[in-house]
Image 1 (cartoon, rainbow, N blue to C red):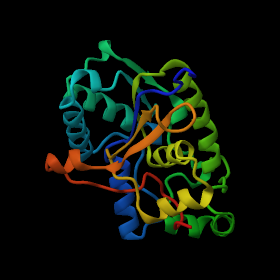
Image 2 (cartoon, rainbow, N blue to C red):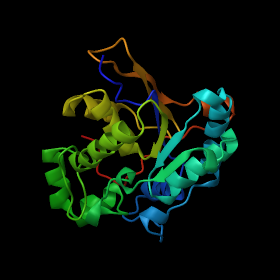
Image 3 (cartoon, one colour):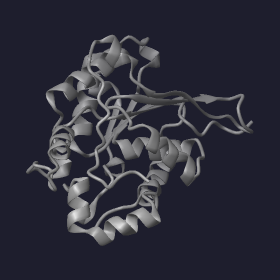
Length: 256
């Protein structure tokens, strides 16, 4: 029998609501072309609600038996993702000294290049030719100048999966990232095609602090495989009475 290459469990979580989410909503509602936030995207903190969401998520992990909790945590280098991970682990009663905790820049937000901080209105006003190109090419392959396409994100996540299989097999791994990160992991782990993942993205945004999980099943496939267990699971937030938010991370053109 081939040796198991996958972790026993993988949880993939989007960060809690951020100050950038709130600022983007305000700019979109007012029809402004630019999101009013001065910090770099990497430094955007959680909102007060986002911290509550992270704590509710941590309480959910804390209710698990010790042997079922995460033993490895990989998080985006962006402040909102790292804060989500740290708050959740603290609420769960998981000591950082007792687990493997890695900040991994490959899990960072998709880079938007010259479209950064622009609302939908701002993109159309300032770069109408890019808006038209994106509508023609589609968001999966469109790469704004200085930014990334979904394919670029998927390429770096393939490298993350290689690392996970090499270093964390049979572990229980928590990944904290961003909306596009969650969807691109789904694309890879569930072996989707472009149309399938874009249909999912078009239907719903990934809620803040929601959980998508995969469990290794030895009876599936030739040598066992990861099987989806939860998708955009928000019961931990609802059980704690914490509002569920689904704001996109990205100031982008309309979905296509």
